[in-house]
Length: 268
Ligand code: PMM
Image (cartoon, rainbow, N blue to C red; front, side):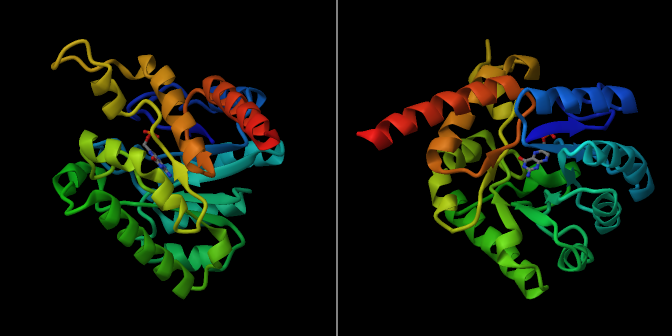
């Protein structure tokens, strides 16, 4: 899944694809490089980000969703808002990537129930402005799994078929770097829940901190793609359904190596 943030303030690519032409050409480049899905977002969710209103979000994402869908690209819309999800589905989006797992907007479940779109339920505890205060767990793997199972139950009770759900542990959302590494190491336990798992580590700060030159200076986002590819390989090995990334080529290459090696071990 290739990331297309049509925002001025996302942590890694904010402002680069706010213009329609730049957004479309970047998305088409990602599909040419091997992305199966383009995830279009009109609201930054980086730690501390302020919200935009629904009309602004719709204005940013709908023309891009429409243009890509009409070219045969599978589009997901990265939104927590039911109105934006509805508008994007009407414009051709086949997947709603809801980082709040249905918690931010009580109308989201009915939008999904009345459509045939896939719903990605990410683990989330609160909006970006103060989510890092919510990073407290007894056992991060058990707690995130239980909270995701609650979201799955709420979705199915609202009438969304279980086979249209994808879960995501929400790397970096109300999580410390330590939590992210623990979730990364235990991703297979999420796969064992029986739903497709999406993993989103791309260029996130726990990687920047791992690769820091010093305690004060994390490696900047643009220098985190090799580490991201390594996390993607680990995610594939754990059985993930997909990875949400900025750099498609390194992900594609890792996937090719992984597939080829798997084919060989299956022959043994
Ligand atoms: N991370 C971001 C935004 N959307 N969606 C899912 N499902 N999983 C994620 O981990 C996720 C997401 C934040 O990253 P960005 O600012 O690079 O888009």
